Length: 518
Image (cartoon, rainbow, N blue to C red; front, side):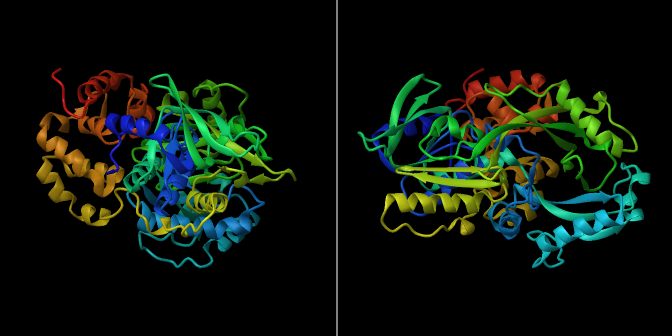
């Protein structure tokens, strides 16, 4: 196993899955499920991981690109703040510095009382955080007068502002972060396959103990059973559908969250902006802004794609705060996802929940920032069901694929650019997506120079990145490339339609791992 996902790896996994009895089988290939698989594998357990769609194909790949440090709910604030702070620091400094970067966020205030309330919350968050310029640490918040807010965020209406509070969050390439978790889990021994739907939990004869899960390979339309000492369900908002009444679940609702994508020049600001009253953030994302989310309940059935209703909701919330209101022509694209909302028996919102039953662990999270801590707790719970001595979690010391050596490779970016015949900006782009694991991409370009050309219809990306998505990252459909291996679907006005033909051609030619004659 080498962390390489492709058709050969998937085929081998599908042979092994029904033949092996695992300590854990994890259902759900989002950030939590992948984190659980990596945690359990690095503790020495035999682990399987399955996902119904693509890795990060659900809520984990449709976020606002922030690993939030300020808890979303109030009921778990005191416990959540130190956990979130610690986990984000580890991600920035050691575990995934190529995919997680600090980003300044400004919260404008309209009155002195607002400033006091926000500062009080952030003081608790900042308590042990030094004021530092070190990339791996988030500086403490700072109070800004009105003139400073106008300087760093001239897009805001000045008459509505008396000042602001600036703090730092961790910006995350969400889908690629999940992919890095999955590939790292495979590297350490997890048997995994995507596009495999969990149909039902299997129980023992008459005792109700969960002993496995019935699975359908959706690409081949074939069913099989995976046997395990414990099944861990981490399927987000879809958890109740699979678990049924085996565990007394809290209320888990599906909430639709939608985001706009704008060109960077549409909003004049050198910092992200939080409009707290609306619950909407403006997050700088390369040459774009991610703006949202709007929130609405989701009924049964598939979630509808991003539409004009989402566009109006977000613009109506943001425009009253902007000196130059945004219009439909300013919007590049948008996206929407179904996220879990957890409500306990007392009617309080929860950020996370774990439950157990014989042979079964269920874990749900509403936020990604504390995924590693929750994954460790889920494996602890599974270990109690399995019996025997299970080592403690070590994922706080296991860098994700591409993290180890990233800072050295960044310092070598000019040398790497000359070696591959690329502009240094292209190598920086690759480093921010692949980290120190960019060598296979560069080798593709050096062996096949035509792959070093920009992708027609999506010039921010190289043809080699599509090929690498097929040969190393498990992409099997064009959507896998458009939405999760790259950001083309969100970062282009046409949603990637102009690039689809070139992507499909590259995928078909390289599906076997070597180029076929066109």
